[in-house]
Image (cartoon, rainbow, N blue to C red; front, side, top):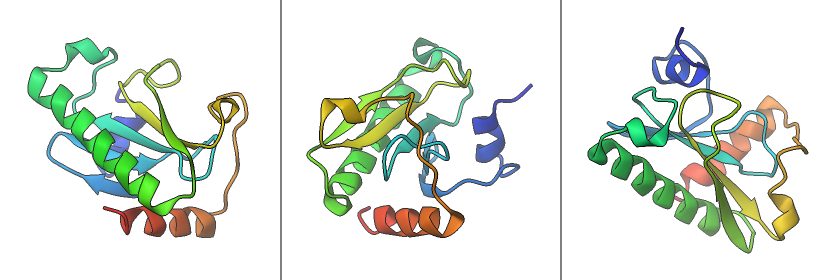
Length: 129
């Protein structure tokens, strides 16, 4: 059964896309822990990072860097935090989270935004690419 990320990549599930390349996609996390929380996902569905070939692996991390730079340009924050845990969805992905303190990277505190707010965040971040 394909992961929710594969369904997003295939266009079967909606997402707030920030950027899509040949090997990877950047989207807003719909269960964010901070304003602007994004995910960078390889298009090839693998549960473990080390199953990706070198080209795909490099493409994902390059897109993560581009996304983080766009976030830093457009969202007031001190740093962009990263996490690559992969427990909640069995499809490798990187969390990019705007941070002002270490405590901001807390996955037990999800935030809720309206569709209008997500669209505004998406437009703000896309402007940084």
